[in-house]
Image (tube, rainbow, N blue to C red; front, side, top):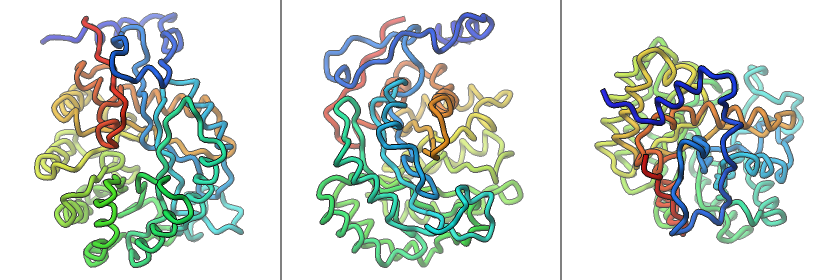
Length: 364
């Protein structure tokens, strides 16, 4: 079996005390992602992504790390492109809770609060050395009737600033104890107006939709299948490859088969690899890595990287750095083509039609 030289190097490095991520050369600046840039040396440059397509600048309680400080976190890593997500489902403003998981019974409800703070911060503190894409996260997919009107309000208050929708919840079992209810098939059919508007604007939408749970692994798959069938022209990103802490024992072969069938059937579907649960419970498990690497190589134009970091006010840079490393660990083993498409951002640039280009990977 052929082994990529980088795979051999990384295995060897893991045995040496002095061979660490921190010793790798400095990340590239934003300006370097233009046509004609020097090739990317995978043996000396970071394996972590230049894109964080799933980054929550705002937490559930609204008490966040300052916007500019989050941007400083990015500057200290390989990330030069990021989606500015809020979290659309927030705790009540008068609640003392900061993490819904520790507060069962306290409602977590869709709201515009975080999105407006992000937009105001973008107006005041838009960085020149990072490319940030502002996203609408307010949408209640189980009660979609007001979505189109709120989108119009966003456009009125912040014209041409929001270019994405999501992360929005189709079904998120982790919030069942906080009064979240999944969108029903009838609810999904009522998305027509706002999904048509997203299609018209050419905005992607990132949807959190759990595959199922350890007892019923594919329980919610039909909901995502309905979305993809009803809205085939929308650019839909399935967050976390459908996984959650409620589903930690699915066989890699079954997971890959489900995703492969959906990617084959729905050409506008993409997956994001955010949230370390994917590496902790799937990619890094014995015998799984090469299966997922083969899957990524096969569908390399359909994958977006992301950290799923949440800017809780007490989170530090080392937390973000660790999330970026863990969610990007699998990049080390990808083919050069897949590495360029995913880690170096070409998929993201193509999706948003940005005037940036991922560098070619240097010859081994």
